Length: 246
Image 1 (tube, rainbow, N blue to C red):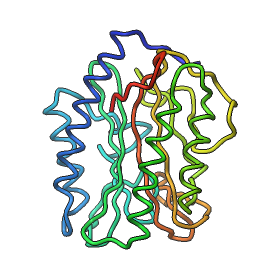
Image 2: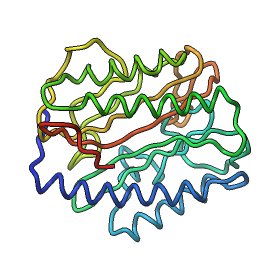
Image 3: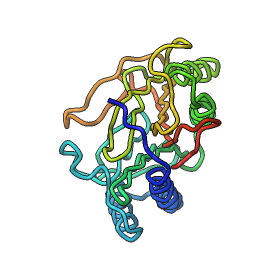
Image 4: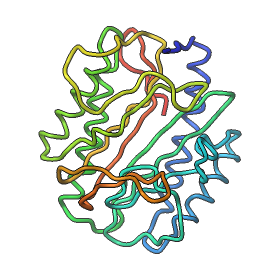
């Protein structure tokens, strides 16, 4: 069931999203060659608690960390571990914040130092797919209109959307209805209504590939080790254009 949020609830989520975006920006500044992903997770926890929020991911369905740090062929849900980030890596950071009982969710992919031009294009194209998908997130459109625009943007750039992973509704729960696929035909699925809040999160890989789940039960990565990128924003549907909350 899709839960519509009222104005005051969306304002709470907007404030939480502002705090989350500020935290993400601070984390990105710290990601340099030589840093350990465990250090990033510890920093994320410190900043979230300092902000007056709670980490959305920690203990969610048993997830043991505050942040997801997915490197190179990792797509999403990579648990921070004793892993050193190196020059030439691309690193996806996925982070959630609970503020006054409501969650927001955000993700970005960053290039570490000098990165292969193809991988830099993958990052910029996936980011553009998010931006274009958000433009379709307005009252009266369908969920699939978002996915269609994401898929179109990624494939026209020469890359491949990850179909197995989706965005989602968000609010009092980190994951709510509806699912928000990264592909689709125009005019399918739920009609978007003012008050819906969704996390749109395109993921793309350099080559067409299946995905596999890691032995920890969390990591999702490309089967052929093709590099992947991931971007995400939490947005509220309004009568006009989407309101970006995080």
